[in-house]
Image 1 (cartoon, rainbow, N blue to C red):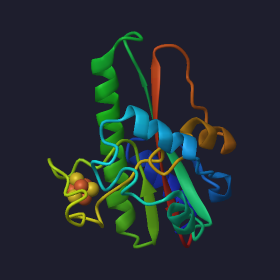
Image 2: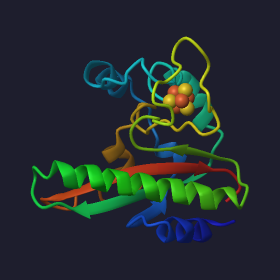
Image 3: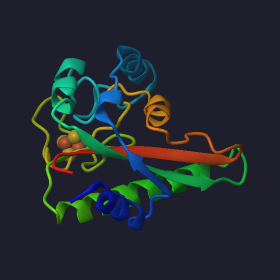
Length: 179
Ligand code: SF4
């Protein structure tokens, strides 16, 4: 599989934009994890989120084995800046695109690492921290949970992040071996 085929799969899954992701542009920052700690109710409540998803060094070690990747995005127009319902629908649509993309990608059997948007909601109540994750193969951590500044990753890889007033852009990525 080459990058073009990967991009075709991504756009065919509903994403509005897809660009090559150079993993060397990814920088994992403690400040982002601190924001999770101070501002997110899922912090220390799910295996997909910090600190359960691994230390920054463990995540760096995981990411450094990938030389290629793809950055995918769903851009949606909102009615206005307070259109919370539109934002939720846009996020759900982005998640649907991501799951469809990963499903299609599995058929090609590459080794890949998906990093998505938001926390893992597979189980209503996560087993963290009392028991191991029930579905470690299906669990997906977010780019932020790994310490990435998403807008910066987009900028570094020449993907627009802001599309003007009353728009919202959700972003995810997949690191892939063998493309
Ligand atoms: S799969 Fe279940 S146990 Fe594992 S992180 Fe997701 S919610 Fe938690």
